[in-house]
Image (tube, rainbow, N blue to C red; front, side, top):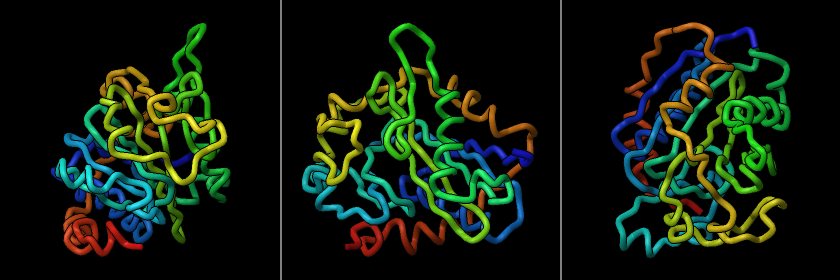
Length: 244
């Protein structure tokens, strides 16, 4: 890749703002001819995020979330429901298509980015192996620790994922039923037998993930006005988060 995205290590003050920030960076990338951005953020509370086409009532234990006052939000990309919580590292890549022909299709983009992330997360040892599984998962010894999704525009793409570093995994079993769709390698395993932590400090993982992408330090100001607008008109609205 000849382009060097800007690095933005930014966690905002609410679940809605953090999801809105990802979309705002993508929309900004569509409007401006820039080199893209790599963002890191870490949730400081627990909340559920469903994919763009998910039916909330099918993919989330809604009543339990409500009783525990755990927010349910929808992201602007596909994929399944996830639990965001402390101990998770989120990464967001916004890349212009001119970054390389390998980003021309969904499949080639998945292959390219997932292999870079896999290499960054790889733990070498006799029994611990990191592999790309399904469409865009990463697994440690066959157990998922990272899920990803993308959105494609006219001039750039948004690719983001969440890595379980040292999260409290019991929340996944509590808040999410078995998903309506599952990758073949899951073999109908319950959450407790399917997901795992990478067991690495988040601050140790960030530079590993950034290394393949960031070759120079380019200042970046987050599009705060656009983020605020998306929060108020979209990510805090039931018409978006619970849309059918």
